[in-house]
Image (cartoon, rainbow, N blue to C red; front, side):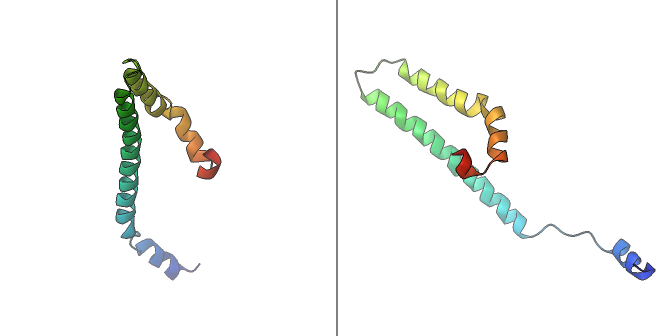
Length: 92
């Protein structure tokens, strides 16, 4: 590399983030929202089914909520790295 090329590179403006990255962020945010919405819809539907069945005991509802809490919050530190490391079809 000659001196002129090095000077051009030193004086070059830093690359701007792509304009599309803002749209990609909102797309990711929307996907996360829909995923959480679906998870809660499953919980609420299951609770509604338990409420409509008179033969099931009342302690089923707190048990369902506890299972969702454990699976989504307490197991996240272990499940997250596995999901990041392997491809989604393999994890599923």
